[in-house]
Amino acid sequence: MMAAVLEAPGRMVLREVEDPVCPRGGLILKVEACSICSTDVKMLKAGQKDLVYPRILGHEIAGVVEERGNQGSKVGERVQVFPGVFCGNCPSCRRGAENMCRQIRIFGFNLEGGFAEYLLVPEDSVRNGGVFSLPDGVRFEEAALAEPLACSINAQERVGVGEDDSVLIFGAGPAGYLHALLARERGASMVAMVEPLPGRADLARSSGADLVLCSGGGDLSEQAEEATDGRGFEVIILASRNVAVDGDLLDLLAPRGRISLFSGLPPHLAAPRLDLNHLHYREKLIVGSYGCTPATNRRALDLISSGALEISQLITERVSLAEISRGMEHVKRREGLKAVVTDSGG
Image (cartoon, rainbow, N blue to C red; front, top):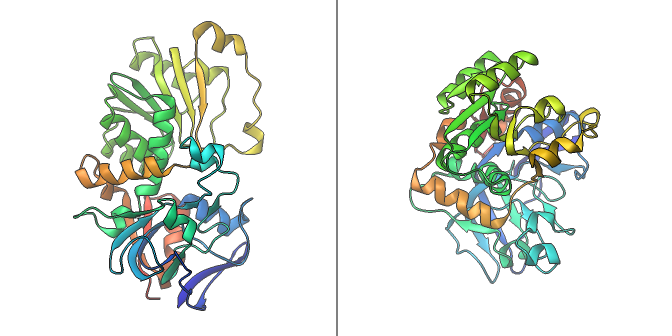
């Protein structure tokens, strides 16, 4: 089969590799869509802590069951795959926090991913409910976006976005766009976004954001105060890696406000000095989120199927597997939002 193989940082090669062999209890999928994540671009450029070379990247995957072991989906069934292969037995898995499983393996990181004609799905993934049948009417390219949407759901559930919340989102890329759509669906009274790039600021407005703010220090504070009548935002979501978690950010929060650390932070921002009395006296919270769970994946597919979120608006580039470099560049340039590999024939 043809696959895009990352052989080393900066070197991705489209070449023929051996077809995967269906394991007992597992599946072989014909990949129909695999969307490109900013993490894929990061791994192409500089690697990642969980990445093992050589590797076929791609973890936002939908396709058709081509071969079947002795369990799970039937041959010909349309499916979407949860990216993590977890044990199902540890304390985290038993509590429904499968993304915290210490034994987790991830497609496109330490398992072969979806930038290929076929994908091997291990027995553990099938047995533990990591393969989801696609509802009628959901296209493959939409299903491939279930994973990033599920990550947004996980974050907003953990930070408690709900009715009448005012929400401020830093970053109007794909993640920020999804957060804006989801916050509105969860009943937020106001959705504001901070985005310095003009093109993405325009996209932010098309996502239904009530307000797009500039990111200029005191000016941002003044804009936030005016937008919330001096109260501050109930929720702040960091869908950007370039935001300092400091006193200025905490000042944008209302009493009992919450911050979601959705994006991983670079080293120079990952160890801030904070006045914890600011949290104590105003009862503010800082909440982490990482990835998603099978439960949030299911809810993402349900939202896409229901039409509650216009998910297809995120797709601003479609490429074949042979054109994957163009798709990577589209994501890297940050001119649009999501690029999706929709033809894996090479």
